[in-house]
Length: 231
Image (cartoon, rainbow, N blue to C red; front, side):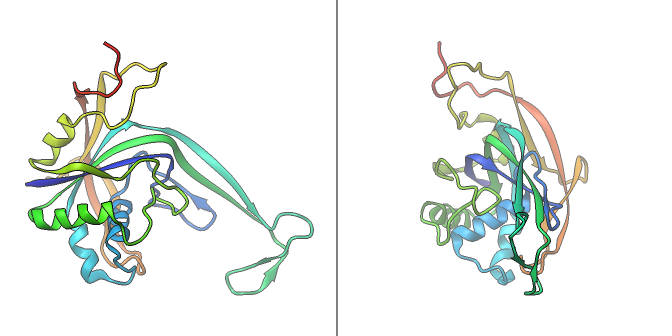
């Protein structure tokens, strides 16, 4: 089946699935709901439009950790100074400050693949990634990609696992780094094995209903073709 590849590289990424109010979590890799949301933004699909969103949710997804990133916490406050007044959700002014803990991944790089039966549909998505209707973000609107999400010639007629295993490393080796021996990949499981993730969209994003999917992770040898690796 054809596979479309995405490059997710940025100084900050956050892929939360259990965030509530002033506590915003992040997973260790991009979530299915987050990737569907990114593709929907590229294609200009409104939050209320389930008809156009549903085909994106049917794609099978895989993730390769080219650089896993470092978990970090952003400590934010609003209205905590003595003279501050904030407007609460009900529209009333309040002197009670809000403290928010927002977790994210610093310096992460992921190669993401989405697989489906319809190559024309994947080509349409790939074209929109090159010229998105709305800005693309890495989990949160303020976390913008530092490199293009679209990959040149990033649609291949091959299974998702094969493409993720053989594609060149998407990031560059720093002077102080050595290439890892293995890379972690995560693939959706068809037989119900693996880890349960509650990030499969079941409705439009305005309704925020998510179901279960199973993800199986494994290690793969580091790809041979790597940019800027010394001989």
